[in-house]
Length: 107
Length: 121
Image (cartoon, rainbow over all chains, first blue to last red; front, side, top):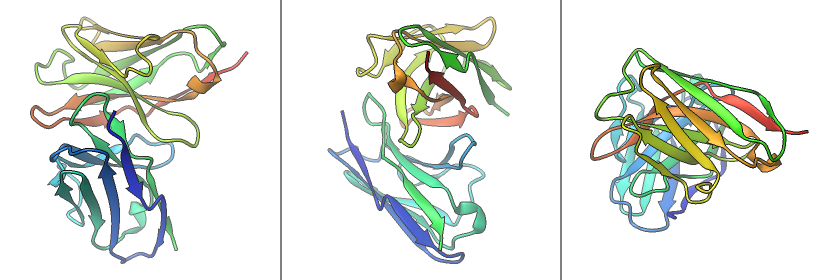
């Protein structure tokens, strides 16, 4: 199985901050990397697919980059509704595996 | 707008079989592009993919659960289902169904709201 490791596990930030979350794969996954936002009691929401493609309807302050084993999710200017847990997920091979999550909290 | 909704018992006894159904609305489960999947999240833990199914019935499962999992599809009802046998407390989780979309690149979107299943006597 491909292991996905996110860092940090948690992060405190303020509205307006620029935030970067990192995801590392245990082997090369090309650009087969997705990012999701998950709020308590809600369905996870796809933000970024294929490492850098913005899902329709997702604000442009979200962006993704990377290929191979190292990927980043960047939020350019945090908004109050962005405080949530973020997960990366590889779709390179089965089983599809997720990172352990990064909880973004209000400072 | 495609929507998914999980349904099934919220409490299952140890050693019994967990059964959940996902109802798809706003689109056909028989779409040639999509697979349909189950993902779970134990309390306080991360997300774990369980398995996926194509409308034809073709399936693939997480090897860690494969011996206990069966996913099936009912195209006439626009539903797909999950059965997980011989459950233990470790199977307590919020269970989500989702569409696996995309062709060359795949992703899960949208997801259902999730349903909590507790394994307890």
